[in-house]
Structures are given as structure tokens and as C-alpha cells.
Length: 157
Image (cartoon, rainbow, N blue to C red; front, side, top):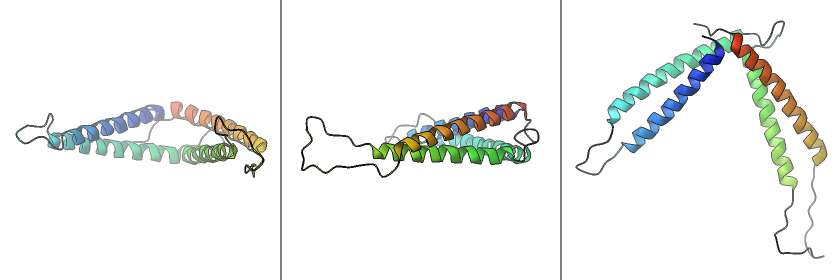
């Protein structure tokens, strides 16, 4: 199985577990004298099986990511690249929120008076936009490398 296939299967298992959790909650209690639509014990058995499968698959994916170089001649493994990609996204999100916080919106229907408090940004918004764009580009390029690796790498047994 290729790494990309394993990732798709992991996502499907995660979605299945979410659905099972919802079904469990729906059948956790019923009105006295009624029976649940589904047996919670049977659902819990399904949850246990799905969790075991997810744990096994996740362990295999992680082991593969640690052992696999990102590209030929590359010193980083896939796990390092994923961590770097996640940090690029996190920093981009933080900077975008900072830029958002610098905007000052005026309430509609009110004019500016000379007694009104004036605000100004404490950061260089244009420079932040440039950094956000650079981070987005780095993210895209690194993500492309990771995805390419996922389609050619076999998952460890």
C-alpha cells in the first residue's frame, strides 16, 4: 500500500469513528419503555475495532514518515517536512490574524469627530503581507514535495 492510500484510509477511519461516536450519543438514553435504535454495546465493539485499526495504521504511517527521505539526496525525512509545513501554516495564520487585528472598522452611520480616539497599526502591514505571501509559497512548495513522496512510498509493514 502506498503512503497516499494509507492516509486516505486513515481519514476514512477517523470519519467512521466520528460517526460511531455520534450514533453512540444518540442511543445513550431512551424514554422508559422504549428500546434504542441501535445497541450501544455493539456500537462500542465497532468503536474498539476501528480504534485498533486506526492505531495500527497511524503507527505504520508514522514509521514510514520517519524512515523516508523527502526526496533523493534530501537530509530531511517526511516527518520533519510535515512538522515544518505545519509550522509554516501556523506562522502564516498568526501573521494573518495580526494583520486582521490592525484594521480599524468604523461603525456605520457615525462620522469622525475631532474628539474621537484615533488608532494606528503598531506593525508594518505591507511587510507582513509580503511575509504571509512568502510563507504561503514555502508551504505550497513543501506540500507538493510531501504529496509527491506520498504517491511513490510504500507503507512499512
